[in-house]
Image 1 (cartoon, rainbow, N blue to C red):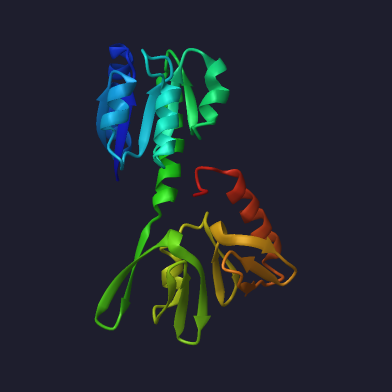
Image 2: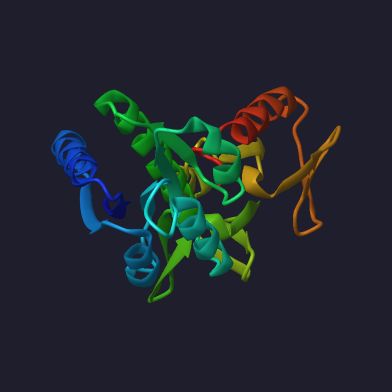
Length: 240
């Protein structure tokens, strides 16, 4: 997968180091990184591409700090995943006010950087959602998995209840399930597969979803659902 990554730091050594780390990770895991480099906050704020996925942002820079840049980006409703780079961990509280994903302390070690990048990319992927392809007659349609609230089996059809509406397809549920992320989707009943993102309440025999619809819950699957839901809520790398 190709990711857009930006690095903003007034220290050229840090920029070069992170660039080298990204090249190493690119060769090891097969992902591709399109990298933008900025030496000051002003250029980053004015030139950062709106579809950038991850921004590694130094906190202590010239007249415009990383906190200033992060705050301005959030006012633009930017969804970029911000990872602050700092030698002063005392700025952490201010950083989290900008909805920062994480922090890297200087000097940045490769193992720490690789871990933080992996977590950030996992978050990005789940935000973007994957796409599954469905066929209806002579028409092929693509559905973003983050748009799915739940699936319901109706005879030989599978009903997709989406944020954008309802659609029906004749593809077997088992084949559809193979395309879904098991960390985000759960088969709570023989006729239902739910997106944990939209679970509001787990009851005795049903699950209340965000669209106010109640979905049947098998008593034999309730405990597993509770465990999967707890795991989902506790892991930002799989929670959109």
